[in-house]
Image 1 (cartoon, rainbow, N blue to C red):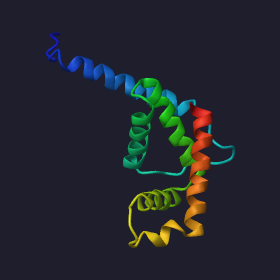
Image 2 (image 1 turned 135 degrees about the vertical axis):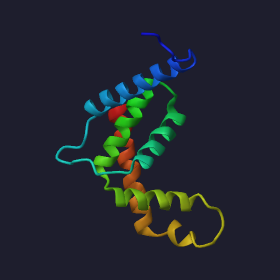
Image 3 (image 1 turned 45 degrees about the vertical axis):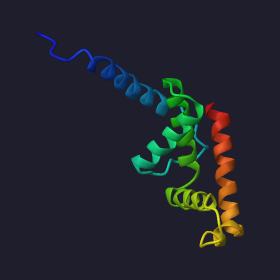
Image 4 (image 1 turned 180 degrees about the vertical axis):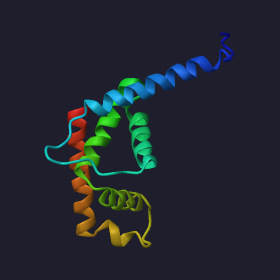
Length: 129
């Protein structure tokens, strides 16, 4: 059998294979809070979190594992609907000025939701990094 794959694609396929293997390993060894099953999250949200984590912590297979672990911990502790609300609040707080976002910047419920997320994220960092 003749290998007809261009040489340029071999490293890419090897990397993708390692990436998939690394994610399977990461999923099996990630700690989760006791008695809590992970909430279902859309793939795009998971990818966004993991990619952002990798930008902050480095781009290696080990970092993918740790960032995936961190996300799994967060997903187990915070339902997706709450995560979506918190993500929106955090984005709105980054907007400067006194528009519609001011109602969210000082609201006690918004501050509590963001504080809870930051606590869970800090715990995930301690467990996974």
